[in-house]
Amino acid sequence: MVNWNEIDTVLLDMDGTLLDLHFDNHFWLEHLPRRYAEIHGEDHAEARHRMIERFRQEQGTLNWYCVDYWSRELRLDVGALKDELRHLIRIRPHVEDFLARLHAGHRRVLLVTNAHRKSLDLKMAHTGLERWFDAIVCSHDFGMAKEHAGFWDALRAVEPFDPARTLFIDDSISVLESAQRYGIRWLLSLLQPDSAREPRTVEGFPAILHFDEIMPELERIGA
Image (cartoon, rainbow, N blue to C red; front, side, top):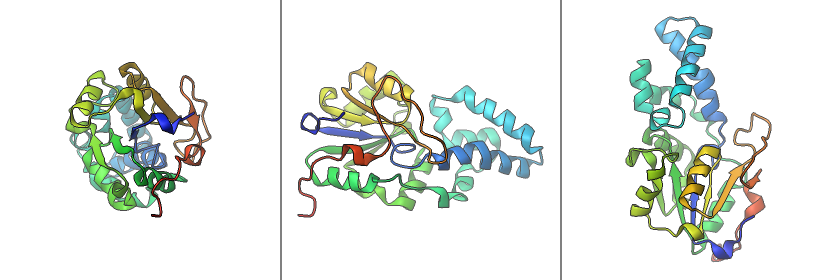
């Protein structure tokens, strides 16, 4: 599934890959609609239905991931509402061991996320995962999501990498397809991004349940 001898750069998604997607699914589908209805004095079921339809219209675009955009659209402080659920932010099994092994080796390891900076900062503060990365790249800094073809050129301009010797792991199939079209050779998805949902079937890409299935060799770890 992964030949570590042929990989120099590892690009890792955050939500649904390193972190349990349950936080995000619960926030967008349950917590935010409920709090919106409470704050604006609307019927919860009606508000939820309307909001979910609105979310679908922006899915795959930078707006979909943008805390500031939804704060304006919904007349709410979405960042503050996310903070109300910080206790649900969880690292997926075996992730820290996987990152520690990568960090101890020779490969360059990047967190590459569509998450808005406010969400990114909240999750890094809560988990402490930032210490394992050589760099953290947020698609909002480029003005385009990972689904956009131009994202990969923008990333490569600031973080040079050889697509033929790069591993990219993401739970989003549309993002993996974008990376595949760009020419990234090693692509991997997740079978259970959200621990509260059943494992899914992934078509078109190899997929793992947990990171213990692809642990890199020990190099300088513990030295």
